[in-house]
Image (cartoon, rainbow, N blue to C red; front, side):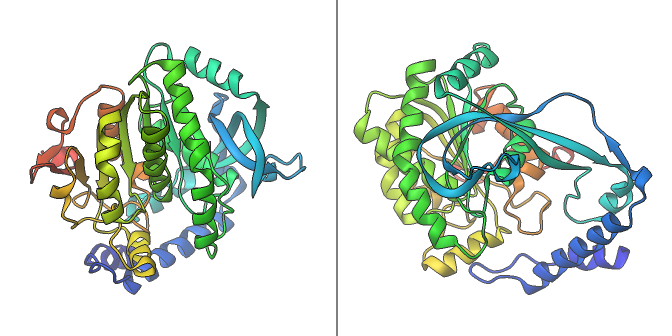
Length: 368
């Protein structure tokens, strides 16, 4: 185990546009080891967590499958209407994995999350509930990326809201990604089809909470969807005002985003982009599209007037892909908490070191 940890820790960051076979094989090696631990775990290794209900309120345009099983209640097809409700998560602790987690170079979960139930309600009820649970604070509208079915999306949205301290102030928008790794272009089509509905959700938040009294976050391809939806809002509803916008590992053409910024920036309080060198899915996306992605480190971010860029390359990579830092890195969750909940721009947030006019590097707290 120590040898595998040493080999993984010694990996260099792959050059832009080049995927690291060593990093991939290292991640696979650890995944196989954890899988063996799971299959060999004694019955006594499982322990139920407390009874506190975890989960998120959601909006979705996914089609209903007709199955009562919560894990397949919604599929990856386009629905005829916006559905809404609450997806509840249950979890079991994995105390027996603690020794593996200490040695692993990336995060090994201490629990297994499972979609427990899908509780549908109408859109108005979801918004009324968000008003009540936000208790005067600004809620955050979040959407996910590629390769996310409803079940996985609910689990990850739950963990994200907890990492960023957004529980009770969080609304998840689930567009109809079909959750298949080979269907990237199919997901792109469904994301673009979803943009008008995402823009309508932004406009409704403005009408419900007031101008600038709600925030937005998008991950990966969902960051692209948020950028396009904000552009749509700026065109169709120029009086809408959004609070803070955080795009995490955004999978959008850097040059395209630079052209959208002048239209988006006037309707938002702040616009923050999170980038990282070790983001392998974005390196692959660059190869597929032929142009750098906004979420990659090393772009000429100085051309993004009025945009704050946070480089996470100094943080430990806590997932094999380097793409899920918003879920697995507590440092990122803390920075988002300061931005979205404490209303602090980069120059006022802790653990950030300025390295350019609009560029900061996030440090581990114990490195300060």
